[in-house]
Length: 221
Image 1: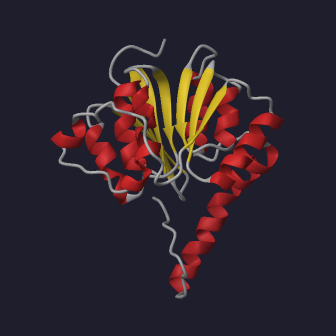
Image 2: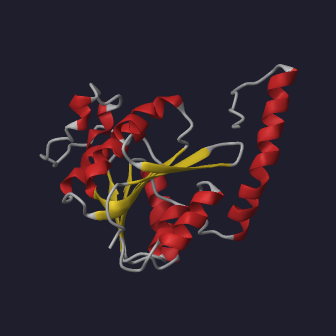
Image 3: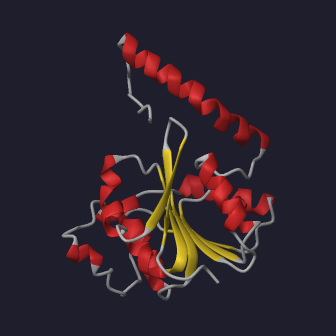
């Protein structure tokens, strides 16, 4: 069971919930302190990735940081998309410090012009969905510039996560993974609808959930 965050909690019950969250979060804080390249996702998902990543894989992530270094050490190539200039500078410095030369970092802030002319996946229309954050179109459409089944995995841990995840699905190879962090949020329900035919693994720690969807088909190669 997840203990949800309650902003500006004031009642005794709400304060107790915040305290419980803080205690449950301690193991994550310890891992982040001990390893600067430990990704900020659930520990169970990290174990899954450590066991399954290979040096010949190609990956894509919406939202960089510790995960960028983590992936760069384990795969052949990684594309990372960022929307915030200040954070982009931090990620750039992080990659330089860790000599992560196999990462392509794309900076696409809100309102950026998109050069992608590939149509969005048909699932948008079949589910009757529309982008909630159109100002991030260049950001979440960037993955459409790559061929279908190009990536072994895609991590969605930035802005406009529904748009990013749905656009990523056709770009993942059969047997590959779509990794959605903070998947317990109800606003991400359309991702679960779009990936209803995919197997999935949920990793929770009482504070938040990371879900890994496994695309039907052969294993990544």
